[in-house]
Image (cartoon, rainbow, N blue to C red; front, side, top):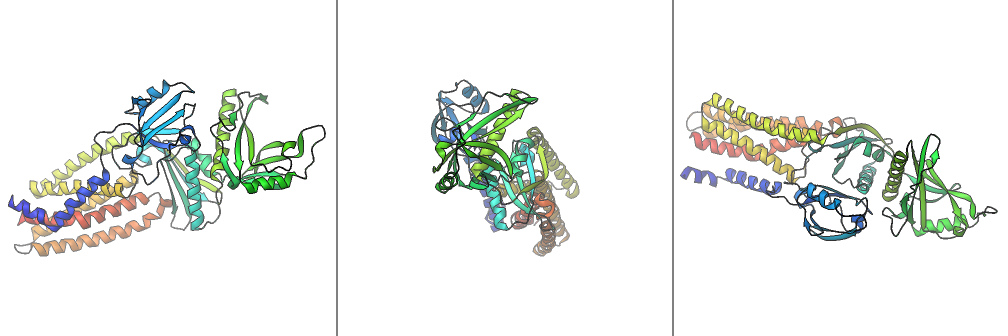
Length: 513
């Protein structure tokens, strides 16, 4: 007991224990989760107008706003949510009770909210563990750092409009200096994001050869209907071998665009026998005309700041045509809300991962991890014939994994396959370092334990420097796809060299004296 008290007072052991406590706080494991977490809220949607917002990227998983009740009925999980919301008819009042307050709105077909099971900790699962899509994009032209930042900001807004906020967007460069944008989106398929992230989204409205307004001059886009126009015409007439449906929605323009409309239209004549001007207003998206509308004579020379934009979609059946029309409408609305990118992007690679594979991998990884720990402990016991030594190394190995997870939670590092590989590499290095310490101490003679530990740590520091030097090129290799492995490995070996190895040496010295 006295020896234990002396160990706890050792500065290196105290630092180790404090680090464990801080990591426990950072991970923030919740033993009882209630409600469903708000993952995303579409802009200008029903719940958005009621006051609900998507969680910011800086909000930790356990601090995300949760829906805990609907119309005074408790919500514990997604099953409860679906059962309660399905019983409410369209047009009826819905009241969401969340951890931040109450929100009342009228139920519509699409509320514009994405919910997930409430997280049980602050550990962030990467794409490999929760499923989704990873897109690697390359700018067509050379871009500056500021332009890359603009691309990321615009892309984030563009995906947020679709309610896709559980995502990671970051810049990367390969060893040749080529710039890339990496987008990882949880829970969506390749078809849902491929066109959206690749297109520049440069929108222009022209009368003749003169530009009336572009996407940056649109101040409001109607997406909910009600007090503004936002509809898909249910009548889809036959066109060729299929059907064609139309849509229209209202946009509000800046005063400058309104005055430009006034100047351009004031000298245009009215077509004899009609109510329309001789010229049409044409809409272009990335240089391609998407629609052309006649201009009513009542708008001649008027400072128009409210414009109705229309378009169409086609398909072999009414259902397919309607779906295509809705997709075209949503896509155009998104570009108008978020603006265009500084340059066109090309898709270099698209990976789609199933959520079911992620859950299976987590279960297998835990099983393999437990078996590996047991095997390592058994091998160490066979090597040293000492339960104290083999047990101490195993406990240090497990505590090192916990510390790495805590640092990852603290710095919001996603845990994906690359990161898990980094954990394995750093923990393996840790076990090797501990074996070096044990062997140096066992080779030492009485009274030279301190000198043996110093010799062991010289070897460990040299190995640490070698590992870090080897990881630095991986930060840029593979267009940034290996960054997680490099970062987690560096974190792991740094945690080991600063916290676990010194504490291990102190405890081992006490056991062997």
